[in-house]
Length: 227
Image (cartoon, rainbow, N blue to C red; front, top):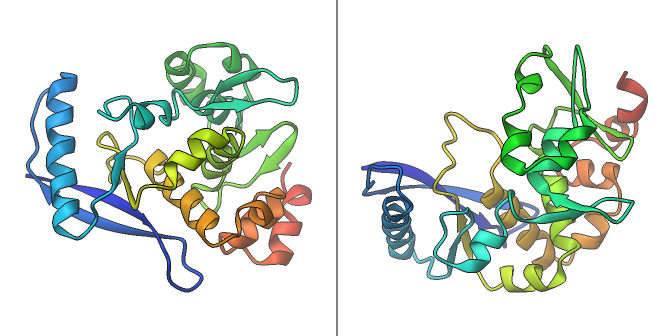
């Protein structure tokens, strides 16, 4: 047995995403077929909790939409019009004590960008940078969420299909080892869209940080406090 989270767009109050940890039968092995067996069991567990429309968001998903929404596949359009994966933008935006942001990672494959040795040998992570705008490390998933949600907003057809689901999983995500999760980001997008807050929240970095719970005065001071 294993436990993995289901991320659910919140429909109550000001909350955005609920996380439900579900127990299910795990099928060991690295083969895609084994991963997909585990996904089916995880989704069966979600169904027993009342969540019938659940989307696995990863390259292992049996739904083509889930594969397209993987951070390795979902495209973000840069100011110059070039489109690169969310994963590339996230990795290329990291600023360390002894280097970064490493803009050349935008031209590599998503896997090459994620595995670039400089990401592990440049000291502590200090901040993120996107198009010359600095992002703080807290809230911990804010920058990743921003890039993912912005990419979705740039892809209205994918975004519209996403709204049909009431829960999201990522079989590769283990909260004991990772912080950022594409399934959680998808749930955040759906929550904001259903609440009619998407455009206002994504209007700027500060508006996004405020919606995530950062006090307005602190959000406004982020740019001056970094570097």
